[in-house]
Image (cartoon, rainbow, N blue to C red; front, side):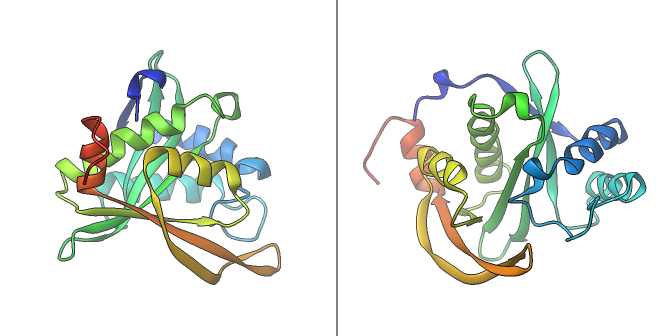
Length: 187
């Protein structure tokens, strides 16, 4: 895993100033296609978006959600750890690059790298897992590039556009992440 190929990003705590960006991104059906959102349009009102951000800021919803910021200071998306199991030391990762101008350019990988490092070091997690729809090939490719491995198929795991779709569960273990960091392929 060569981090030098990715753009630099910063993860910062959410602020109420992030509300409008998030609201606008959620109006774009291409952005939300693979996100777990209500089946209505728009998925959230501005007020609901602001309320969600406030819950993230106050840590009252179980999410450790952060804004993804480019080196130039542009807010382009969000990333989070949720379903945090402190006893068993694992959590679920979620990510969205809301600004489509930054798709396919390594910003998601850079943000994932930062969040994985934070989760393993600060939260002392052993495993960070995710669920991704089996037809979201671009995301699956990115997760594999980051070092995630497939654990199995979660059958009919998400209700999307009037039907159930399967999701793939993938994970990365702390030791795998840090071995990749150090350029080792040995576990």
